[in-house]
Length: 201
Image (cartoon, rainbow, N blue to C red; front, side, top):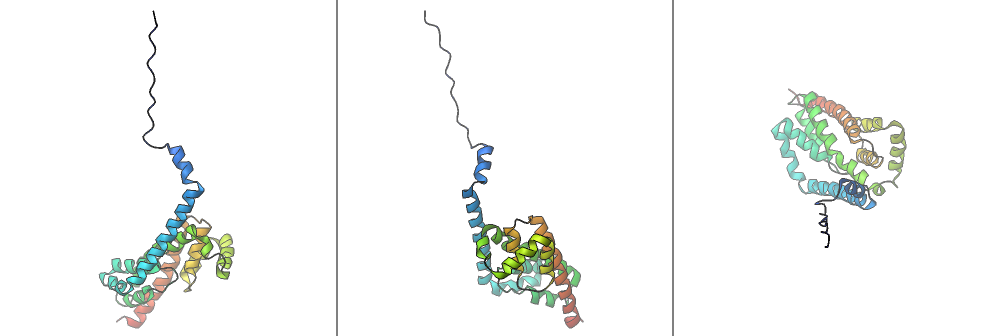
């Protein structure tokens, strides 16, 4: 008499890839390349949008502190291009609290500067051959967030490059944002008080 055979074990394939495989893919060169391309495309898209809508940016300021935040956020998201943030902070400093204006504008500006940071994460080669990039990288490796603080406080055209350097060197995002916010806030508070001096009643 033939013995009964054990039932065959049917293997059910997993419904989704394991987290281990997903993690290995995330750290693969292909995933890193896609992330860099996405970061650069995001930065370029934001900049292009600001250029196209620059005539409408000033209208945000009529809505008070939220308007100042939006103007500062959008204006400082522009890569290496001028924005109306300084003129607006100067103007509203004469009719609103300069300290609050500086704090709100500094917060928006620091968040807007993430485009430069992301551009550095995604495309270091875009700026690494420039002399200013090399000099900022030299100081950034030694002073870190203090360089971002100084660039944010002192009016200069190099903060975007500094943000790119910070991103390329993988400075922690929270440290970059805190340093940028502190520096930009100091600058905008001073600018707000200047507007109050010249335009206030």
